[in-house]
Image (cartoon, rainbow over all chains, first blue to last red; front, top):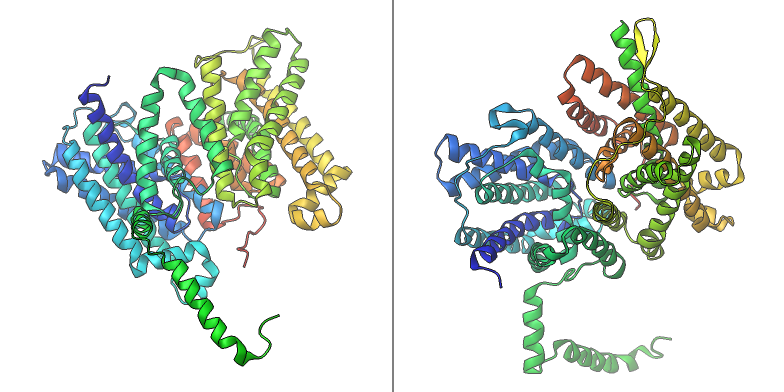
Length: 312
Length: 292
């Protein structure tokens, strides 16, 4: 039905979105901060990387990395000023930041201004994207399991309490934002080298929203969910292409429906490794939870007589 | 000097429209504590309702304005019932409200694209386009009209909030929805009223905006600026929203007139960030504190 060329193109887009959504997932799903400015980080990554490959002849992988690091530096700057803001106000500040980046690029004639920058070498291939995705996913999984990741989750759950037990809330929020921006910058750089043309209009607020919706759809607090969310929501519009203009109408309705019916997203808080463990347990018949419950009961029984009356 | 006066008048007129839109954001924020990003969609629909009331129903201008206001008000109430009220019943965090609002905004915009089409539409010429001149400065009739109608609408809103029993309940809810509920205020009905009022003002604003410029499905994106105005003034504060809007209108037209028009939006967004950094709760906003 579809040619391989077409499917390969969508798969590359999936891979790029996985990268950006992973970063956003760390910020939104694991640290509990909302950003509507990630299109701005993508734009920085894309424009810096493109300048590197086109003007300075930097090799592709290095240019992508430089793009990501540039976005990270921008995030440190913006985070320093705005991370103390509470809730909605932080998300509004990122919105302003994202739009400001786009408008600055609109007026920068050196990178093509509003007309855009054509003729970018098409270096992003499926293999490249898969390699970078695997590194990205593994690094993220490692980070989440580390002390840093656990501290971020603690901040998401209860900011005041985390501060009270000695977690430097500002520092870990900053860390989360910076790594998130690094992923978004890398994603933006890959995107630019896949499309071959960039224009400030590509990095509008709607792009940030699209990425946030993927994170929510896949499930907050789950790396697997983010990957699945990026996969499904990149493919879905392609499958609905026949519906033409009604496509985005259904998309909007679906977002509302998810918020109402399953706000934690498809795989909220569940990882694929949990599923493996669950399958293993059911297959081998070793139900650890049941065993633990039985043991606890036994212990309780032996202890009860000594207590006298037991609990009422 | 005359250039400055001219820009001042333009700024006041666009600022008053921003105020009509910003008040809708602030009303919702004051009680539900989230930014209703679907408001832009309601404003856009208001512009279309006004256009069709004029063209298809061939109503006079004031009639069309009333139709646009009520139709947009009903859309806003409907949105609340479908997209927010289930979340409200579950006490969901404001994050989910925002996402739901964004979904609604995508839905409304593309619904119009799919049914009416993405083309630009212009309002019929109701008022003559020859400007009125006062000495060296000239003011277009639509600018005067915008300013007057926005002023009257806001005055009605202030009357409702300050002088009526419903207004008292709205003010009570904005301090504490739970406390008001315990005192016998029907919070659900107050939220209904809030969305109706915000939606009606959005309808008026949408129609006036459409008359000054054109009507197209992406008008909602431009209304983001009225959201900036609401933040600038302090989310949740009605006088703040009005003052913020007028100031934003003035800053925009003056920077367009004296610096360069392409930097206008950039200045608006930079202003947003600067205000948030220096005074996170806006010029007149209530101080939000984390609940322990």
